Amino acid sequence: MDEFDLIRRYFAPLATSPGADGLNDDVAEIARLENGMGLIATKDAIVEGVHFLSDDPLETVAQKLVRVNVSDIIAKGGEPDAALLALIWPKSRPHEQLEGFARGLRKDLDRWGAHLVGGDTTSTDGPLTLTLTLTGKVGARGPVRRSGAKPGDDVWVTGAIGDGWLGLQAATGALGPLMAEAANLLVSKYRVPEPPRLSFANVIATHATASIDVSDGLVADAGHVAKASDVAIRIRAADVPLSPAGQSYVDNARVSLAQLLTGGDDYQTLFTAPPSARAAITGATRIGEVSAGQGVTVLDASGGPIAFERPGFRHF
Image (cartoon, rainbow, N blue to C red; front, side):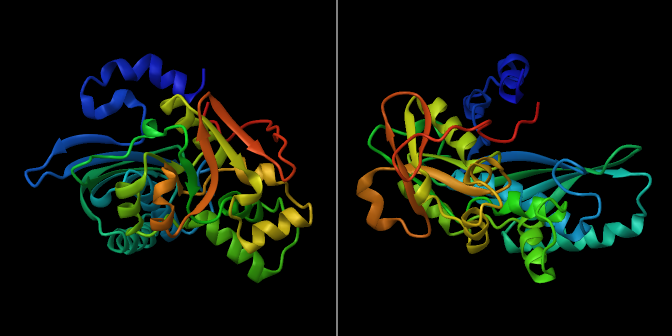
């Protein structure tokens, strides 16, 4: 049973409000405000040894915690608002380390326009575990769901894909010896991901028919949109944006393009939009199309389908 089967079996039956969307999305709309805007909420957890390394600076761990939630809000066309923190602190860690964590938390909440309003703290004999509940505000249209993609739409993605996975490989030594400058650059992409700018939420709210943040891997998350929208998505691998570092590693056969497309930890936005919106969309790269059918196909430079061992990260 994978993560999504588990949710459908045990928790979706409990999600009876319309705003929960049957737990088929990353956010819920929890209220409609007097000014016509919608109040949405998301919740992500990060765990030591799973989402960050034990020796990662806690300042960057706090920043990552904020950003994995911010990416969900932006992908729905919203802007962050209030945050609640759950801190499950290992008894083996000195309390003094909380100073760096709090500094990183303040820095990123300020950057993304959010503020802390509450939470909970407890201790554990296990790993450092952190969760953030983040609310956001969306326009009268409401959050842009995964389920609105239509045949004929374009497929777009923000930023560069694969740097988060590359950064993890660099941090764990899987890429072999690296110059200090190159290693620091790559590792920083893993520790502190860079979601789309806040203003990009307006692009999503105005033009996107469906949207999702890329956390488990580009192919896997495109698959979630295809399934929720009951459509087929075709992606041109050559059009997927890579950073100079990512392109160099692929060109030199040190990593495969498939690894970058499925590695996850990108926290970019993948969305669909009608061709009529092309001229208005900036800050994203058009990488494919939506058609009738099901599933995701990724095409290589010759137009043939690429086979993947797995489409992305799996939690179960």
